[in-house]
Image (cartoon, rainbow, N blue to C red; front, top):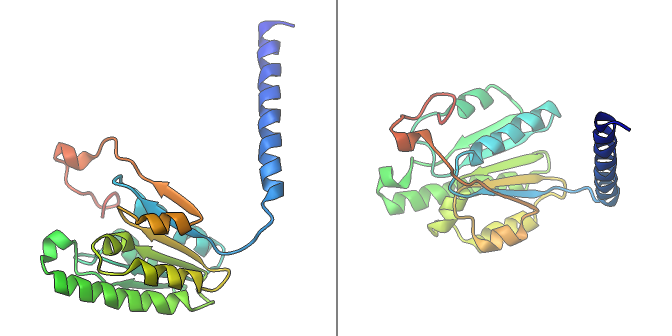
Length: 202
């Protein structure tokens, strides 16, 4: 057997072993229910990933609810785009980033109002996917209580999926969630003096 054939055979054996591992995991995954996902960390992409899942859900003819906490100072590309779809219930409930508002009581009131809208979605079995964008920040700043959020998640419709985004997700939420992803920054254009760009950050 020449070197090329030997390399091809090694590759086939490796991929066959990999296939067996993946097939075994798929065979064990027999439960079907709604899942809770947390996107956290200091890196870019938490909300972007959530809105990619909104697009995926729409591809499956699912109804989606979006509540944006904190954000709200100016319209974003995802808001403008997803408002075109009648299947998406979209609420921007924040007054902008906290360093812009500089009004804690107003921020708390906005977070509570957003949470009231979110609770209605979390009780609605017709909404298959709920995105609570930047809610982790509201939890970190104690504008909301983690206890009330976990209670609503536990009592939501069985097949409803929920994505919670934002830095500094509380430990209790991470423990409860089914899937947790931490975005880690390596480089960011803003640090080099490049302003936020439409279609990238906005």
